[in-house]
Length: 360
Image 1 (cartoon, rainbow, N blue to C red):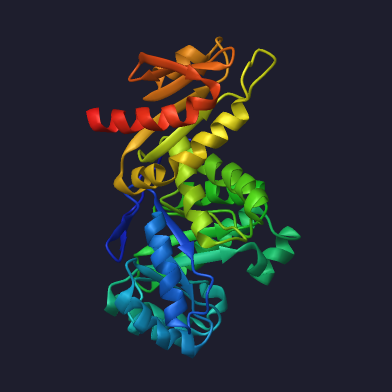
Image 2 (tube, one colour; image 1 turned 90 degrees about the horizontal axis):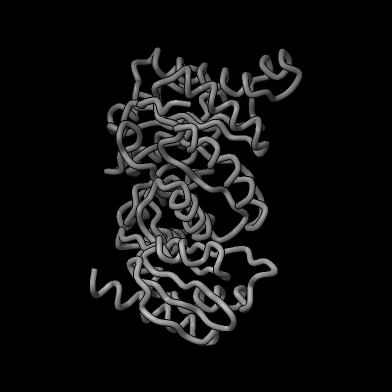
């Protein structure tokens, strides 16, 4: 599917849509009514490379605390609102850079209009978020349950409502925990609307399972040219969401930062303990990997187990090693720079990376 240019909106200085790079979001898992704990988590997200943070606003205490959090936040903040339009207005007045609502559950059209007018005055966008767990009854009855067409129709109904009120700074999201349903719904809306899309697979699950579902669902959309901002939803520390989102974008060549490690799966030709070598390299990279991730630099590292593809992959990477019988031939910038015993490979690679950094 061809990449379709979307309108561009601005979320606290972070552009979404148009030619802007895909921004990474996460959601805090603290009580928003606790500014200290929430800010501590936002700081960690910012250090990990998050672009935008979303905060749940379930009650007026959270809406009022939003102002204190916004005053010290290093990231743009999105207020996540359900059921009560007054909370949306309070969050906007407290400095939200964007609000996320489902117009279908926020109240009557008059109440939606109050929210829209407050967003207009503040000059902030609205994310229309539609979830498979809260579709309109008439759509569910007509389709016999949740369907891609139903999700898309619900989103477009809500978008049309905001547009009829003269509001255009809209981001659309459609969320389902079913990867196929989720993907097909996004494809439908992608063709029907020029508003930027926030993509993700909601309630994806635990760290291991959630990464699989997110890679399948988000990756499929990104490869189709769909998506302007994204969140990986994991039942885990939110920093894990940022780490994996960056890894996914790097794997798809949509981000040029961090250290990409290529390692072979091994086979009967392998004459070293490659799994141990790669684990050693990963462990020793530590601070170096963090530096690359936050500085915008990129380095491709190949750790290969045998002579079939090893030399070619290692030569094609910035830094690499091709292993043989208990040894490894080291490469930097496409040239052989030495060989070491198996046990010395992790330390040797770290040394070469540091030297490579110095020379480049």
